[in-house]
Amino acid sequence: MNFNNFTSDLNGKTCVKCEKEAKFTGVDPKKAWYCQECFIQMVRNKFRSALSKKKIYKEADARDTLVVYDGSPSGTFLLNQIDDALKQITYKRLMVKPTVLVLVSESEEPEIQQVIKRVAEIKKNFLENVNWFIAHIAFCLYDEPSELKEFECNGIEKITAYKSLLASCSVPTYKKELERMLKEKCLQKLAESLKVTKCMVTDDADHLGRLALDQLCLGRGGSLSSLVTVAEKRNDFMIIRPLCDLSKREISIYNYLCKIDDHYIQFSHTQSQEKSVQTLTDAFIRTLEDEKFYSTINTVLSTASKIHNTNGKDGSRCSMCYVEVAEFQCETCSAVRNSCSENLNIIFS
Image (cartoon, rainbow, N blue to C red; front, side):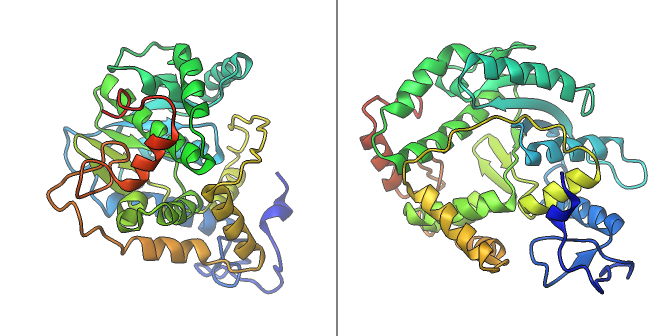
């Protein structure tokens, strides 16, 4: 990766922490610049702070956690941080008992085999002494949680049905939303199969900022805070987002500096030409960033964290997306259900 991708206008810049010559900045180059050592420490502190301020692992009997690796830079960073936290001597160790889940979204056999091969290589660098499992998102279609097998892609036999289900959705916006909900359903079923109640995901600030705007457009504005918070509780299952304060840029720089940026799993994705709320949201944010409105994502997330649902105070949640609702199902999920020709009742029951 080219060093110049991360730097610009370095003349006279000094580190905000130690006053050494600065080389790196996070989201907004008009604000804080860091030397290499302080930048690495700043990123690590953001990760640890996200977990410690919620006291997620204060109970000794609830430390088993599913750590998701999706082949992305954010996934690589997450593995590195968990690995580093377990080996920590100088600072307080993160009291977590991880099981790594490699979540596969590719549907072609050659690409799935490539994932299995790459996982064997990546495992030599991170968390080698913990259990690793590979599963396709299609695992969500199993009626009941099933036993996971090592060294193979679990749920592969459901891929055809999974593709058919997505193809049955006639509205691009609702298809993308259905994909998101199926992914979360998959994580929940995998956690049940492994008898784990916590799941760390790779959602960084850029992803969550876009998600917040997507959900606002889809009519779930009252539930934004739960969708972007560090820890989201869902009955006996908790989604943990330890990268919620980190941008993709910060993660990419960190991976480059720590020489872990060759532990990705890259694919040649064909970009969908279908217009949807999600693609328009992404284009909108990219335009603002290109015009140097660097704080767009931070502003969106800061605002979203303050929005809370006034409905569903009795604890009732939508049967599909799990946001708080006054009734059995939110209107957005009803629209998703109506746009699909296949029955979703078996999956979201």
